[in-house]
Length: 347
Image 1 (cartoon, rainbow, N blue to C red):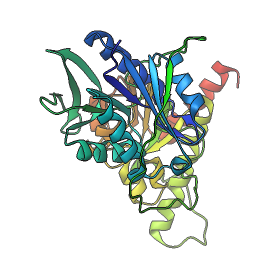
Image 2: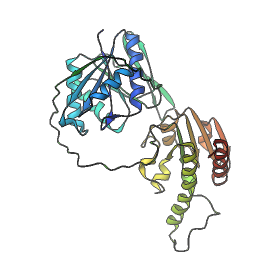
Image 3: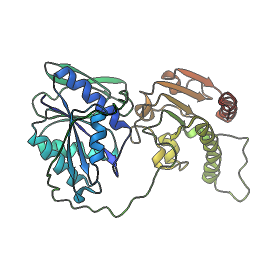
Image 4: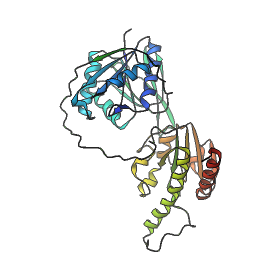
């Protein structure tokens, strides 16, 4: 069977990102509708095992560029390798999961191959032999259907957690072909890594508990006497608020998120930001505590399956998208919710 639907296996040190298995499932769905096969593309060093995993999760075969030059992700090198593989195989469709690496990679490959790229894909259909993608625009208020009409391959960067994870089939076999791929003129060098997130990753989390500017509004809390600056008092109150959010997140094995307002005010690091200029997430449950619901924030979490809003203001925009809403002070509601869940879950 010809394989004209390709899927890029994003990984870190040979460990596939969780969304990779969702993307293999999406590619499998497209390939079945087009009557073709799925080829997984793996680039790195010592990553042959990842190709076998991709086949077990639904790919028909795999192309592997395994070389010391690809030990660390450098977008110039990876783009050169991926572009050559796609060109040599006459690939018609390429799916990638959405990560910081693949956003950059997809754009560079599209330039190399003079084709188009559709980011933030949340659905697709097959029409006249083409993949017609669906993506949110205008901060998620409108869904747009997009088709790359003439150029090939059609490149789609898929939002995490919108397609079901495809489970592995133990023993499934396929052809793994090692390819020689040029690393290109890579002008960057990786000198090391530093973790910016602790705990559950926002992009992979099934449950997210987020805080907004409202986490700092608690007149019952009195900052220590040595804190005299008004902004520092605000930050101190916010830290107490986020401590409650983290406790609830721990009970639910959830990730901790934040609005841009909370990040800009210095309450939490940028790594926690959810929104148009932060991380775009699609968890099963999104609990917004003291989040007003600005358009920028809604753009990053509107596709959550169930949204729970906790806010003192009954007119807060967040309630317009919430499935469940609690009008109340988060400093009262969140601890009560945490206690109830601990009792329910036996923690």
